[in-house]
Image (cartoon, rainbow, N blue to C red; front, side, top):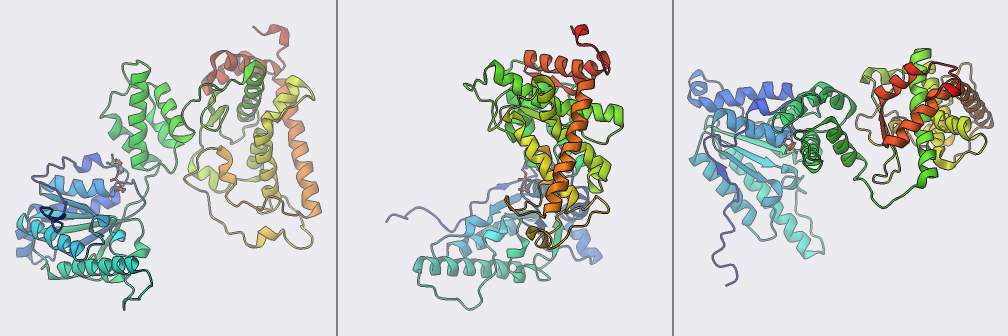
Length: 507
Ligand code: ADP
């Protein structure tokens, strides 16, 4: 008999007794509200009798809901760890089997073991795999395997509900379940006496990200000089899991680069790896190509620094530029983000400054190469015209701008999504939230105004960079020599070569 000796009904859940999950609340950051609520469960697990005596009904089942990688499993483990009780973990998918009766047997087994070892914590990860909405009366499909699987899942879910109901409160077992798709769950599961407490585990904000980085940095050898807060600020939307991975990758880079501890450059390398991709060897741009890339990137970066310095613009300044082929890109320009509020209600002057920054690439090419421009700055130009169109149409920031006739066709279906928190890649993804069809027919007037606006801003940028020709050349030179340049170095160069520095003074 093929199946002999294999006990399918036993759940694979491993109990780690005596809080040896080893996780404590101090290992969790960025979800303070949730932790605050969950403290109560720990107090209960530590002393269930006290709750009984006082006549307090303990919480029954708690549903942790939120996006992946934000610490649901971690916080569940921390509850068991803090209380020092056994922790039983299983994934919803482990209950879903095609073999009839296996899933429900596993449920029975899991609950039995948790009861025997109470007080304890039972954690079912991805409960949506097991507990999607039942179809009520079983609908026959012509696919027999599908029928069997659906029926089996429903039987398993029924068993789970029976076990939850059969559990008297005050029995010293806490049920936790995690999902990122609460909408899919069978409503029966969320009724009173079952998973009736819901706690949202949110993605961390910038302070949370900083705290998470600190936790993970404390587990590796991180150099004191690394400024974790700037990474927290500049990586919006990153989950705890991603940040943990960042620190791990940075540690690997440090080892590879033979550093004694993780340096800023290792962290930067790790960020680039995780966002853009690993360095590509074997792609050679050639010296001319490198000069073009450097000119474009420096043009954009320098424009933002100049606008901040001389026109008090609220635009991002450059963190670093690299001309190293990586992933799909030939060079990278990384900006410091402003605080989130700055993006909420940007005003026209701010957006026009940003438009100038985007045009800085082509403008720099013109300053250096004259009319002989290349496609190196094409991406920035595309971003620029898109931004200009949005200033004029969706945001309608140019008063009194009247758009005659029908609004552009995409206008009607536009939904405001709000600043996206998880943008990656291009800084200006931020503005690409609502993508109109590529070849939409624009109102003639809008088209004309877009062109004018771009031309105006372009001319301004060209003259700005001409005034700083020396600084532009110097920055490009340094970038070509080092393949990388940091924002502080750009500031240094700007101090050294003020406006109108004659070129013969260049070192
Ligand atoms: P989820 O269960 O929500 O998908 P996990 O708890 O499995 O996420 O997170 C995976 C790993 O990411 C954790 O083991 C931990 O190293 C890290 N992590 C995630 N969220 C946090 C957090 N809030 N604080 C500290 N580390 C975190």
